[in-house]
Length: 228
Image (cartoon, rainbow, N blue to C red):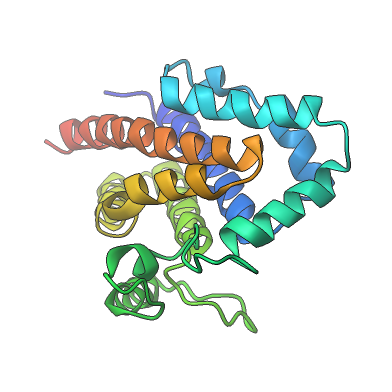
């Protein structure tokens, strides 16, 4: 039988990554975020992913070597690349599933409705006053982080079959609403970004999704074996 504490530690580490990414795609970086990324150690997972490591190295290199106003420069790139403010190519790297899964690159398409219904089924809603579509990458990453919290709580309560369902919900959601456009999005972010930081973020995010697929497979295998 897999050690419950080991499963919880791995799962909570996953949740931390998803929350970090959620914050990075939602708004300009804050000083605490900059400090956290500068000190982040990917090898804490004891698993190598070259793309993720390259992305982190690019992000940290920028933060440690840029001689100007780091926050201001990154805020400008966030507005240009992720918000597409003032950009000729209005798609840029807008972090919405609808934009990257429709030929016209439009917001509020079927994927947004599907994500909204999934949030509703799982009892999750956006913060009151938020007027962005639900298929924003930040919201979807935060949703996965919330499911990570539930997974750990259920394991602590000994509810392994329910924990397995939550994990399977994560995997289904990621496959249907994140992995299906992440290749194109990471490419768009790297091509559109003006700073090494955001180009690195695209690589880090794509590499993390590849790595996390393996983590979820391992977690599901451990719980499925115990259920037999």
